[in-house]
Structure formats: structure tokens, C-alpha cells
Length: 573
Image (cartoon, helix red, strand yellow):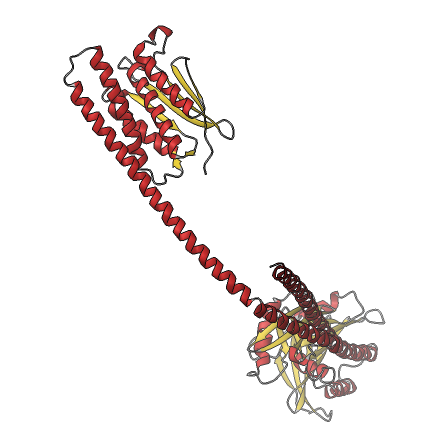
């Protein structure tokens, strides 16, 4: 037996050690996996930052080229040239031919005159706004791609004064040395979205007007030129204007899934004007999207980068080794636990057999208790029946006696037997005889005693508070007889008049086993002279019953009569 206990103790220690190692290895595996996730996330963000940096560098290099061309042209235009000087238009044509994103070049004065060169499909359109007498007109002329001006000139009414254009007014108000960027937001459907870059040319001599030079670019073509050599093969960049309007699509095919990814990313981004990273799921694919604002003078662009997650290495060699080692350790430990389980199978089988025998014994015990409960109820029922038979015999015997003291004493004895039968009758109806609810038991006794004294008891109220206590059958029988005696005394002697009154029945615990039963009325009280032979017997019976409960009994007058019974009882729950 001692060897078996020692073996079980060793098996328990070994199982505990295996579980501890399993927990440690599980934590190692969790930390290793967490490390892999963290490292993979760092690699993703690093690659996004690198791609964003390349895209931003390409955009700023392109912007710088535009600024340099604008500054060079301003230097060439600083000395005022004749309005019909062909070298200016030829130079502008060369600028537009060198950059397919360039759409137009305009030079406007503060008086409203303007010279513009606009790219068309196979040639250039020359627009001049001049003031003739009291009105301004637009002169239209075409230029070949070779730079030769065609002789035909059309005169049209002035379509729009250049001074009313936003790029003109913003250039006039610009206090910085950098050109002003302006992209209109209210472009109608079918119109080209044009980015205007304008700069003020201040005159070098007094009396000359202020002029504004403007370059017009197509942002979509500009973005394609910027991202052409600055994008990683597994990364897609987007150029946006405003809080979420793409002007350079990542892929021309609108059916491509990346467009749905871009739409979800823009919804998640919400146009926040700060650097933001969002994750997007589309089908089974997972994408990481990066948005960053790029501020220019007067305008803010947004660069977006879309990176498929499967293109990022998800694990490192060191982390993979840690995870694999933790998994192998757990496999070995699980095998040991299985071995211990099979070893303990016999012990568990024996334990189950013992539990089965224990359950059988419990069922037998429960059956015996149930039979005992039925027997107890039958005993109380038979006692009640026998007492009722005795009461009936006493009633027959009392019928032979004449009215007087002898018959009254005879009827008092019969009443006490009726009270004993009542106690056994109420006890028989209790649900649980092993722990009797005294609140319910006292309530039923008080109602029954009140019914016995009708109609005199109709004007007398009775309130019972047993404090939620429970008692065994023997104690309950003694307390029930005491309560019947005291309540009967109250109904017979405390309220001689029809005004009625009130009776309080209180039961409370004083100490662990010491309890106090109080029956108090607000009747006429009890003087020492009123304790005649008739009342003394009931009090003596109550005192005797209290002694059976290892207690004491006393009665005193305090505005009414108060009966107190101190007794001992083991508490039941």
C-alpha cells in the first residue's frame, strides 16, 4: 500500500513537472510567434517607408525640375520683349515638347493682357488677349510642332479675363520665393484636370506692369512620369489631390482588384491630413496601405502606397527555429502525458468502481432516510389521531357533567390535548422534518389558535417573526406546545373587551445555541392577584416544557403581558 502511494506521488510530481514545462514551452512558442509577428510588421513598415521615400523623392525631384524651368523662363522674360517676339513662343513650344505632362504656358499682365501657348493634338494654339480701344479681344493663331506660326489669325470676344483666374490672384498675393501650386476642385465631367504653377515677375524698371507666368500640367501624366522609375516591382503608388481623389491610378485596368483595395483603403483613411497606415482585406489577399501628405506652396498632395502582404517575408530563420523547437518539446511532453495517462488508467478504473459503490451506498442511505421520513410522518399522524380519539372521549365524558368548576377544568384539559393534537397535525404537514421552518410552523399554529377562539379573536391581530430559524422535530413539538399555551392564555385573559388588541411572537438567536422566544400582548396586563389556580397551571406547563429544552421561563407586565422562554437548540441550516 505504501509503495502504491509512493508511486502515485511520483506520478503526480512528474505530471506537474511536465505541465510546468508545457506551460513554459507554450510561453516560449507564444513569445517566438509574437516576435515573428512584430519583426514581420517592422519589415513591412520599413519596406513601405522605403517605397514612400522613393516616391516622395521622385515627386519632389519632378517638382524641382518644374520650378527650375519656371525660374529660368522668368529670367529670360525679365527684360520686357515685344509682344510679337517669336522666340518666346518657340521656347515655350520646346518646353511643352520636352515634357508630355505640360499642357500650357501663359504670361499675363496686371492690365489684363495675356500671351498663351496651349498644346493640342498635332499642333499648338496661340492665344493673345489684347485691348483694342475700349474693349478686350482674344486673338487665336496656330503653331506647328516645328515652331512655325501659321499666318491665319482669328479675332474673338474676350472669353475670360486672366486676372479673374485663381492662379493669377494667388501668384500676386504670394510672399514666398517658391511658385504657387493651384489645382481646381470643381472640374466638370469631361474637362481636363490641370495643375497650375504660377509665379510673379516683378519689373526691373519703373513704370512697367507686373506679370505672372503660369505653367499648366496634367497631374496624371506627371504622376506616371514620377513613379515610372521610383516604384518597387511589388509595390503600387497612387498620387491624390485633396483628401482622397486619386489622379494617378495604380493600374489602368479598372477591373483589377487593386482598385477595390484602393477604395477600401480610402474609406479607412478617411482623408486624414497626416501620415496614416491602414490594413485592407480583399478576398483572401491582405494589403497594407500607407498615406502621407506632401505640402507644396498653395497645395497639398497625398502619396499612397499599396503593398501586398504576401510579398513580405513572414518569418525569420531564428524565430522559425524557436517555434519549431517549442513545438517539438510540446510533442515530447504530450507523449509523456499520454504514457502517464495510460499508466493511471487502472487506478482511475478502480476509483470509478469505488465511486460506483459509494453512489450505491448513498442511494441506499437516501432510501433509508426517505423511509424514516415517511415513518416519522406516520407516527405524528397516528399520535394526532390518538389524541383526537382521547379528545372525543373527554368531550363525551364532559357532556355528563353539570356546569361548574369541575366541568371547566375538564374542558381545559381537553383543550390542552387538542393543542397537542394540533401541534402533531401541523408537524405532519411540514415538507422537511429534519429541518423544520419555524416561521411557517408558527404561522400555521397562530392561525389555528386564532380560529379556535372565534369570534372573539376577530378583533385581535397576531404577527410572527421566527428569524428564519429551523429546528428538529423534538424541539419543534416542545416549542409548539409552549406557543399554543401562551397564545391561548392571551386570547382568554388579555383582551376581555371588544376593543381587540395585538400579539407579537418573536424568536431570535442570542448566542450559538441559546435562543429566546417572546410572546407579548398589549392587553390589560396580569397582576399577582390574578394568577389564580386556573392561570397557574398553564404557566407551570410552560415552565416544565422550557425545562425540557434546558431553558427557563418568566412572565412580566409592561403595558401588557410579556412571556419569555430562554432555551437551547443546536442551529440548523
